[in-house]
Length: 213
View: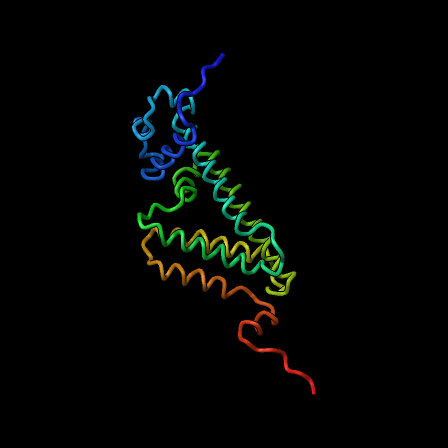
């Protein structure tokens, strides 16, 4: 009968994630993980496998969390609030990046940039995550179109791809050193260029249709 593990797996994975996040995959040794987690290398290998398998576990958990944050902000709710949900999500991503004063960036972006070219697991998980985010954004754009906030003639797939690129791009340029106010302005501009319906434009400008005599 296998012996129960004498450590908190969640805590160990969090410490391993912090180490990978700080020093990257290539810059992290199992000795570093052992020191960060307080476990011996034998225990780490026995519980999680080699460094690659441990990173895949950490990376997969991170990708799941990225989608869960988006689902919490975007999924469900009435069509009348879809545009507000989209705005809230884009601004949240800008604020999260602005608050990253250490410029560590997102582990999804860092892991994909470092490993996706030659690691099929990282490449597949990255693509799966981006597809999930794209679907959530497209669903909300379609809801805003049904409510009459976004022009119904616009292609929701293309608009979703635009917003996804903006959100992920904000993270990249924030890590490169752009100031928080610029990041917020990027979010505002991306939302401002969405093709609003005529009714929504009138609401935003405070104008109402002219009445017939």
